[in-house]
Image (cartoon, rainbow, N blue to C red; front, side, top):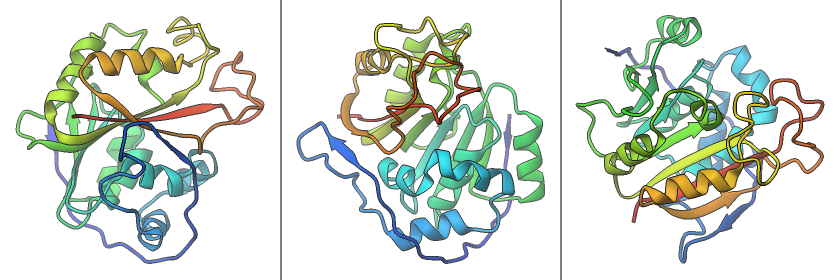
Length: 251
């Protein structure tokens, strides 16, 4: 099932964009398209974004997240597990003009349906597909795939993650990126805390994604928080959770 909606302009604002990225692969210290701080600020300030979106900005750090992904106008992007659409909305604005954001979910919820009903956008395509086969069948080769704060949930669902990551690898162009952000568990916990604490060991994510053929391209520390003990549910933290940000590339 696929729903398409009409276009919304972008309002310009200016802020400074900061954040730290650790380069992993040779020559990969920045995404293919350099970020423009004024443009990133304009995306964040766009009035189409809801009050609920803005309330999450302090924790989710879109001014650092968007440059880390390398998203740029004209790109074809898939956001896996769109949820209420916070990340999808940012990416849909970032690919304008000329791009398309596919927001994948196995079952569209009320929040994402309401978002698109109230603010139709031609480049924001809601796609109802399973996690292990998330690619729209009519989509062109993709430039970027994101999976934000939900890889841990997928680990305790009846999802073939090997199939999912391979499908994403096959759908990307050579040089395309796969960006995963999630709540950190304590080292060595694997996927055991995915359902209880809603966290995952980043070593598991690295291993599973690299098994699909990806190379680790960069790690971002803009969502790190060493004060998080990582032993409480990510839904009820006393402090913001420690989150890892990983950018993989398709060779």
